Length: 83
Image (cartoon, rainbow, N blue to C red; front, top):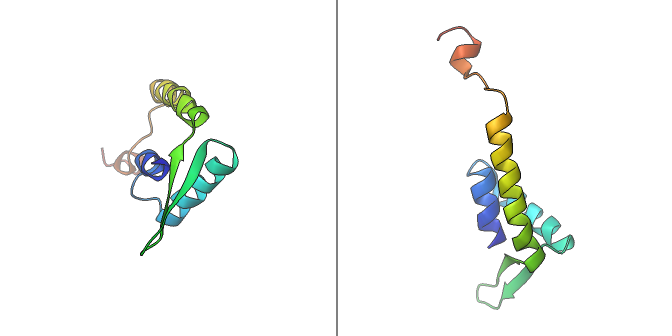
């Protein structure tokens, strides 16, 4: 589901509401579809459209490139001169 992808991408530090907001934005862009499961309890989820699935490989390649080319970020200890 899209929210699982968003959780993986932004990690546990991101809130469920922010992941849902991103999923709604992806849906509005035609990259995901919202699916409602009748309850009780009523639940909603998102799945990628074919365009959303195709975009995942492009984003993965871009993220990999960025990881290889970004400068090293010092740790907090390095910034205060402990290491």
